[in-house]
Length: 266
Image (cartoon, rainbow, N blue to C red; front, side, top):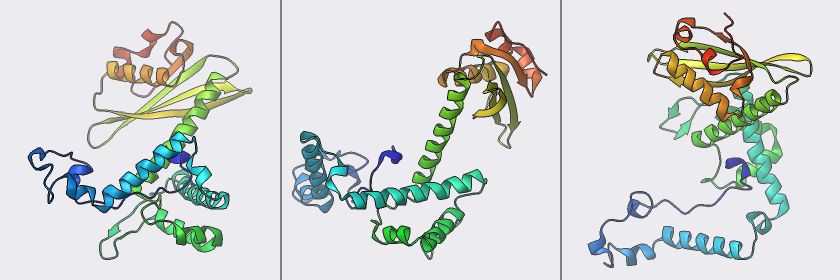
């Protein structure tokens, strides 16, 4: 998981020999050929670096040492501060419902977007962060779209875990299920599932999850809802009442059948 990384990892340089990195080796009749087989690959930079990293990992495993013990504590703190700053920029944008990414400028080989612009502005205002940025390996900047999505998913999971904890520790075990849906242009239903509960004498309504389905029948909605509750360790039998937008679907085969205590709130 990204959040557990202590510092950027230095990976081997990319290799044009995709048979050793992604597709798999198949040219077995020429495997021992000095020009196209294993002997040539053994002399490549990517293989030498990969072997070096593998041997280093074996050594760390045998000595029960981690990456943290191999680097200076101040350097470790700087890299953590760098990753934390990236997370704070992403958090600011998603809380304010702003798009992170924009258009990719081919001539400059650079993507223009709010995340990139805001992070650059943050570096300009923060000398400590700017110092780390100048020494960060360019193959491990942790600012790619993939890393951004991983950070967002980690934040989503953290928020959901907090909501589930509050629901399970509420003043009473009963809760109300609330669902609303909207259909997009691809004729898919986006279903928002929320829970209403009492915590510390205060009534809370928290969005638990948003799911997308192409099937618009009650059976699909029922299965999706029950699976969501079960996956998040919320007991469906504690459902006191239910609220839906789109009653015709649930009238066909509603969730009331799934709980003796459930009713329909319209």
